[in-house]
Length: 422
Image 1 (tube, rainbow, N blue to C red):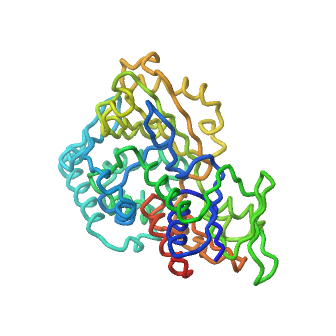
Image 2: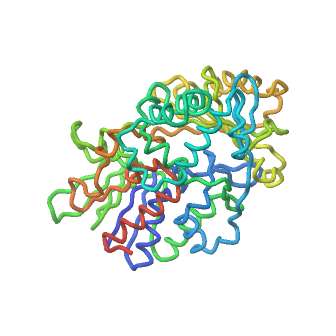
Image 3: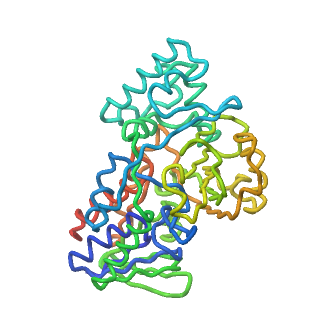
């Protein structure tokens, strides 16, 4: 089969890898100039680093299996990094269950309710039972109002803004139930995984083409090929086409009407700075920001998990956000945005100085975080599309998860198997 795949992220590359090994002719078209999608990398000190912070969990069996399949199993290492919360003008340890239950301001009853509700979410299987409940309503009832107001609500509002009250409890269940305290990272970065997939596809006769922004997808008749036209004027015809872009990107390219379900799920954009520092800025790997006036969601010091020597001695600090695409934090010119963020970094660490930043990088993605509401499940599009030769494989379909390398790998393998491509 002459198979086309749009998108060279985790799902697209996995589908291409499976299909080319099964003997199909494969062409991947990627709008960016590099593989990996949201896990694509830049270079720091001669080493690749993800543009947006990435790691995997012990529970991410599909990604772990793929890494081993590609011969990179010895490069995958698991770490036990530290976590903190910034709230009330102070840094609070939040790494262990003991840290969590002695959160400042918790009474013994608050600690007990927080611990029991969290343990229940870890133990409960089948989080779909929470589909129709909102996270904050469930948390206020079971975790308690003080724990919710101190820990959960600031995190949800920091991530979803005014949509926080709409977020489904099924989404939060998935975040708690499926995660582990140990985090996995590949020596040399996840770029090694995506490069290995690309190389494996090309070594078997497939093609991975970059800077191929898709403008239109058409199929004239039930048995006609799927035709893809790109912004550079190139045209492709495929026996079968797998599209791994976010739903709105596919809907525009396919010319689907405004009322089609594929338009209806809502996405937040993502912005992320990588600051190259000459010293450490925070005492944790991951710092959640639970102050409502802060303009960013989290600060992640990657080099609290990976040795700074890997990156030429630089200490690497991510400053990440999920925001509406119309928000000033998404639209502001990056250099100005960084200057507006600096006073808040100084609140976290009063010693922090602009001179610590030796270089910086900025990345922005328009469709990075689905907003999972109680009605979300009914809006999940099927893999089948109005075009018989076109199959949609997108992050909305991994519900109640919302994104993640491992879930993308698993979804791609499920779909290629169902289509008889692997």
